[in-house]
Length: 196
Image (cartoon, rainbow, N blue to C red; front, top):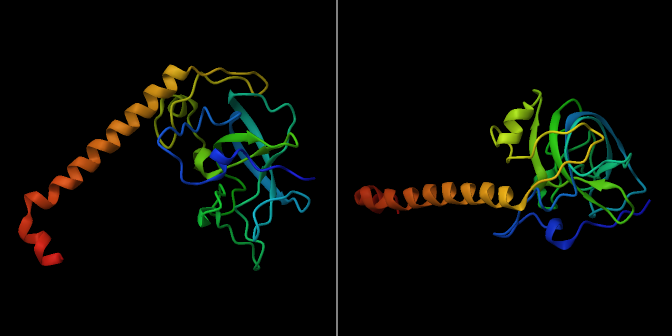
């Protein structure tokens, strides 16, 4: 099965200033990854083995699954035994270790063949412990704010105003941290000269 890569803006792992991972996701789901299987007929970046994820879906925040398979095509190294998960290698894979058994909230993009693809830029939660839907929705923990949780087969909408507010809050917070970091050398000039 040939799967087309996601749109160019989503394929890169260096998101631009206007990047909104929820708006750029066609589907946002949460649940437990029960396992995975190699998907040799699925295309992906060189040096990777695409995998099909088997996921129990507990929540849908955006879009609809409609029985479509979920793939990751840039996390599992095609060489070496045992399997090596190298999602952070720059190809935008979602997983740095075996995701089986983990709980996840994932943003997914549609491929040209109707399947859904993961991406490192769209992981809102990934841990051995179950996520709290209220925390994920409000932006607590590892996630951005999401709309009210829906049944796995329901569609959920998200307003652009809420997306912009969430991203603006994050940008202002990070900007404040950067300014504080820039001021530290001025408070201790002797330390700065000694370490140079």
